[in-house]
Each structure stands twice: as structure tokens, then as C-alpha cells.
Amino acid sequence: MSPFDINRIRELGPAVSNESVEREPGPSPCGACSVRHLTFCAPMAEDELGHVSKIVSTIELHPGDPLFDEGEPADSVYSVTAGAVKVYKLMPDGRRQVIGFLFSGDFMGLAHNDMYAYSAEAITHSAVCRFPRKKLEQLLERFPKMERRLLGMASHELAAAQEQMLLLGRKTAKEKIASFLLHLSKRAEARGQNPNPIAVPMSRTDIGDYLGLTTETVSRTFTQLKTSHLISLQPANKVELVDLQALRDIAEGA
Amino acid sequence: MSPFDINRIRELGPAVSNESVEREPGPSPCGACSVRHLTFCAPMAEDELGHVSKIVSTIELHPGDPLFDEGEPADSVYSVTAGAVKVYKLMPDGRRQVIGFLFSGDFMGLAHNDMYAYSAEAITHSAVCRFPRKKLEQLLERFPKMERRLLGMASHELAAAQEQMLLLGRKTAKEKIASFLLHLSKRAEARGQNPNPIAVPMSRTDIGDYLGLTTETVSRTFTQLKTSHLISLQPANKVELVDLQALRDIAEGA
DNA sequence: CGATGGCTTGACTAGTTTCAAGTTAGGTGG
DNA sequence: CCACCTAACTTGAAACTAGTCAAGCCATCG
Image 1: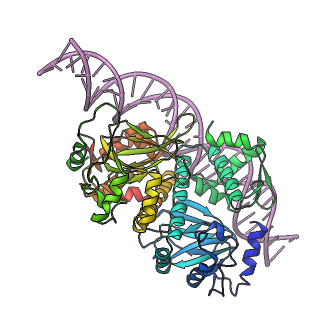
Image 2: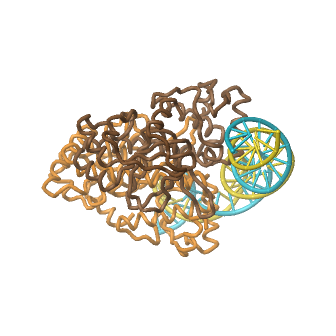
Image 3: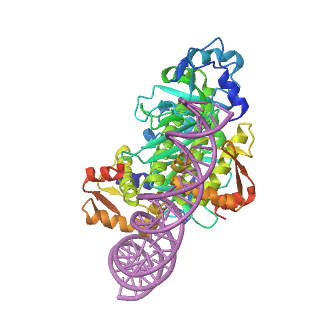
């Protein structure tokens, strides 16, 4: 979490309860959105933002707050504006696969059919924008440039998912962890945050469920990378990538 | 492969060499396309198909023919009209992850940046339509309904990729194979083909590289399912799903 | 300052891979 | 038309990576 993100959340005002707070849109929530250039709202002109503000509502989430669950009617699409959210799928016996970690600019809930294909839950104190599906679809129809942007972001997501398939299907534990850390670094940079050291707000269990490993293996592998002086574990869940090139070599399997 | 698909290929005429053959579009290749309802061309009206025909060229592929390679400039987007194509990523040491098997109606090459993120190669005798990227983008700009269709298909792909992440990260070999066979069955049905017995045109190695397993484990697991009378291996690479419910229970991990 | 939950470490187990050898099937040429 | 040849597939035994079970450590927060 950058200070930038924290400021964004503070703008939302204090929570009135320990549950998620949903606020009606103010005069121009989108005009003030500091991460708009990262979201699917990016192509909208200043004087068109009113159309977006009109259908959006802002939700504040605390660590562990659920946003929606797999199988629920997919009434809304969400865009993360601050914090970190995880999306995951569950098997009947409790096995879990984390599909992705979402940060500022990322969206979720773009289901083809009418149910969410995964569950979403906040990792840190976060803020998301909620778009009722029907109204968003009307907006997309009126502004094809927004739909184009969404297609571009979906293509990007798809490429990332395919890269993750390679990781899950063919990489070793060490290669998975190295890839994961480099991926976090790249994404932080893309959001204009510090790429090194990186914030690692999710738990070892979450990381394991994202990489197809157990908590224990994740922990052992971190220790191994630390002992080899490739990374350094810092306070406040920060990780310094000490030897970037070595990490890249490991991640690629070279 | 259904007889239907084979007929489609025969319409293309004989190959003039053992390499892929690229043909200039005839008077109305799209008007005659029998799988159009499955492709991203579906929303186009009959009298608009000329715009599509004008930019498309048809390519015939024989088993093993490469279509493009990871890292090449992504000049074109392709739509499969007959046969089966595999797309895969390679690691420097040769480890391979098959990202997907494509059949009639599926598209590939929708990269966000300017390079293909994976390689594509024909499994069976196949036919694909080639759309120069620039020209396709112009077409999408003119026909937002086509772009909407593409976004819908991309969302669907994304959901499938996420399901595959769960498979790769958390399922056992037996669960992976059961899921794979059921997935093939569902997809055949969606294309109007027989969902049981199913055609399994890809090799054990391809299946392994798709499921994150070795050839040997795939083979052993098929044998195991056969011995348990859940499936039956038939001639011509066909597999009969004998006990559908048991396969579903295994696939879901129940 | 104690308690809780997350993280780390250890010993053992198991599922899958690896290495190796056979078997089957399909395509080719005599 | 048959026999061979090759590649794909199957099966077996040993090895290894990551998982499981269990205990201890650390840090954060009332």
C-alpha cells in the first residue's frame, strides 16, 4: 500500500460500522478519481464523466471483508481504486485456488453468464467502485471507446492468465516464487509505485493458493531465497529484490 | 472430427504443396461459412459479410503445421473454422505448457501488445481464417456489435482460463483427466457435435502438457479410469464416457 | 505483557516424475 | 497385400519434489 492509496481511502470518510459501507455518489466521484487512467474509465473525457458518476457507487472494504461469492447472481462489475483484493475459487472439500490479486485499476466480475465465477475478498483496507451490470452495458453501448478499453484490458488479463497457466503447470516451487515476486514488482511499477522493495500484503496461505503450493512450501522457499541473498525480508511485509537478474533467471527456468 | 468438419476442409481444394496453403478470398467465403454462428463474425448481417470477406484469407493446415510462434509480431488474428489447433508456451529448457485446444469458432492471436504470447500448431487437418490486425481493428471500429461479440468471447475465454488455473493448481492427476474429458464433451456439444463418445485428436503428450502432467501419468490415469469402467477407449482416438456422474464427481473433487 | 494468528522449521509420506523397457498401431514401401 | 518401421502409447521400478503432520517461534495487538 502506497501513501497515495491510503489517502484515497481516507477521502471516503470514516466507516459507520464494521461492515462494508456503500455511499451514494457525490457530485463527481469520478472527476476526483486519481487512478482513473488505470481503469476502464480512462478513455472517458472530463465532460463525459457525469455519465459514469451517475451509475457508480463507492464501497470501502476492510481486511477480510467479502465483496461477492462464487455462484451469486453477477449483478455488478467492480473496479478497484485502492488497496488489494483477492479473487478465488473453492472446491467442495475446501481446496482453494486464488485466481488473482487485484490492485488499483483492476476490474472484476466481468462474467459471460449471469453468475460470478469466483469469490472476491479484501486483503487490505480497500476501495472499489460498483457498476450495476445493466447500467454499465448501456454505457458501453453509448461509448464504444469504453468497450474497446475493456476489451484491451480483458486481452491483457487473458495473457496474464495464460502466463499463470505456464507457472502452475510447469514451474518448480522456486521458479513460482521468483516469478511471483517479479510479477508483483512489475505491477507496482505499472501503477506508479516503487518496484523495489515491494509490498507483499497477502498471507503465505494466499500466496500458496495462488501458486499451487502449500503455506509451508512458500515459507521454505522464501527462506531459501533469503539465505541465497536473492531477496531480503523487511518489516511491514516488504520484500527487497536483492539480485534481480538471478531472480529473473530462476523465474524463466534458465 | 465430425464429417461436417472434413467436408468444410475439402471445399478448400487440394493443397499444392506440403506447406500451408493460403488462398485469396473467393467471391463470398464468409457467406458460405457454416460455422459463422460460432465465431466472432456471428453478429454480422448477411449484407455486411462482404466487409469481412474483403479482409479475410483462408489457410489450410495439415497435422503438425505451425501457424505462428511465440514472440513473432502479431500481425494477424485467426479464427478456426475446421479441425483442431493447439496453442502453447515454451520455457528455455523445453518445458511446454499447452494453453488451449482450439476448435471451430475459436479465435487466437488477440494480443494486447504487438507480439504473439504463444505458438500455434495444427493437430489435425484444419482450416483457419486469417484477419490482418489493422484491418480487423478498422472493422471493429465500424461494427461495435462485432467488438461486443469479441468482448463476450474474451470474457468466456477468461473464465475458462480461471477454471484451468484451479485445475492446474489444485487438482490431482485423476481429477485433471476427468475434468479434461468432460470439458471436451461439453465443447463438442456446444459445436453441435456428439458429446459422447468424444473425439480426442491430441496426443498423450499434448494432453499432459495441457494438464501439467507427464505423458506417462496421462497414460496411467486413462488406464485406471478404463479399468474402473468409467471410460472406454475406442478406435480412432475416440473415448466413451461410460459413467458420466462418476466422472463429474471425480472432476469436482467430491 | 500475554494471547492469538501467522510464519517458520523439522521429520516423514505420498503422488508424480524420471528412467527404462516393452507393446501397439498406423503408414510406407517392397 | 503384407511386412516392416517408426512413433505413440503403455507398463514397471526407483527417485524426488512437494505435501502432510507436528511443534515451536515471532510479531502484532489488545
